[in-house]
Length: 90
Image 1 (cartoon, helix red, strand yellow):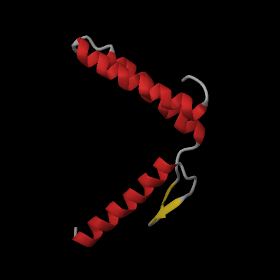
Image 2 (cartoon, rainbow, N blue to C red):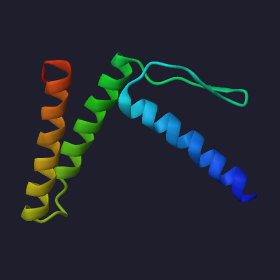
Image 3 (cartoon, rainbow, N blue to C red):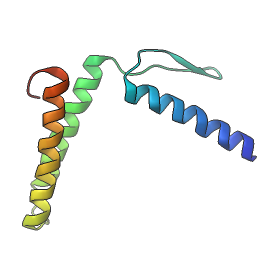
Image 4 (cartoon, rainbow, N blue to C red):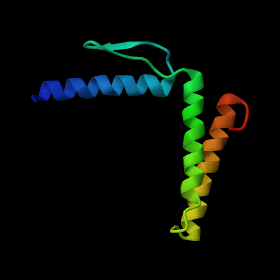
């Protein structure tokens, strides 16, 4: 694969990723494939699953208490962002 193809692929992936982060609701076509950002209900569902997974990881017995506290802080931060964005708890 030549350098131009690699940089072109990275540019396309970066553009799609940026659109997803910014929450723009646009379709992007790359060659014959269509990429569409997830709907708000899909985003909310993904956020809930991420928060649930975070709390499951926090409860692992193999973690020491300091690691569990650190992960709990991250999980609480995710929940706070969810409340700020959607106006209710996950």
